[in-house]
Length: 258
Image (cartoon, rainbow, N blue to C red):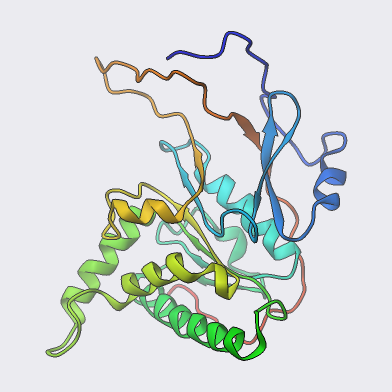
């Protein structure tokens, strides 16, 4: 790959005990989250209001996608958001399962129901915005979707088996996720999407809804040529997961694995 000749060194690892990191997190506004630290020590952030309402993370197995999603969700929780964790992998986001301000789902049926419920909540929030001018008085709602490519295929198969005559052909759960990606910003609802996007039932067009992408290094297949770049990607070392808050969430039906 072609890189800028003026290379800078990234920190190999960041910990919350590193000097100044907690202070840097504490000084950030609630509308922003820290993704990592760049080569020159500058923060790499996402702005939920002015920038991207959704984040896509993708890497090879063990590349850190789950940690990035954990880190972003924890910062949102710290600022009073409620989080719906859809973890069909069952091992990636168990840190969230016992938190009062988290709805944790890990089997296909409850993930399906959660997404359908989220669409109803999105419609409620948009109606609230139409009436009051905005949703600033409502807490943010985060949807953390682990191994999305696998989960969405499971949802497709689940709907093919359970739908009845007269039901729509497309899974209402997948349709709800599409709507959330398209209009989530207006409802203060954010998707943290982990996995390959172009292999999901959402299709490659959904990529346009993610202006922030965190991509890990992927080992090339044997004999494959490395892609060439004329400019280097923006590099950063992700921060570890931040502490969460015990602030009470809005009323919600809590689910767990069966």
